[in-house]
Image (tube, rainbow, N blue to C red; front, side, top):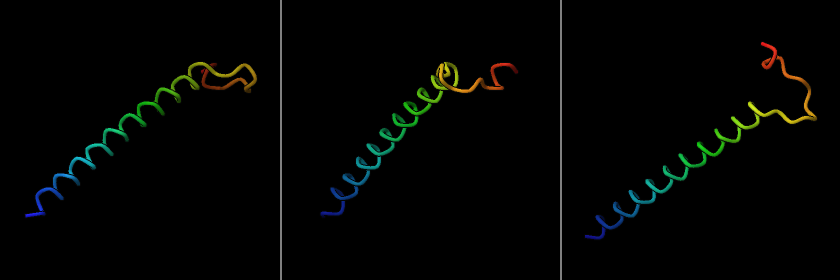
Length: 51
């Protein structure tokens, strides 16, 4: 009956990986949003700002 603890461990591990991935994706999305909306002063003027 060691199968049930193994399944439970794998399930919790996958849940942790999914939540970690979601937090990483949201962090990358926020970083991309900041870089896109607030361009650096040293960057070349972007065509997206002028439309």
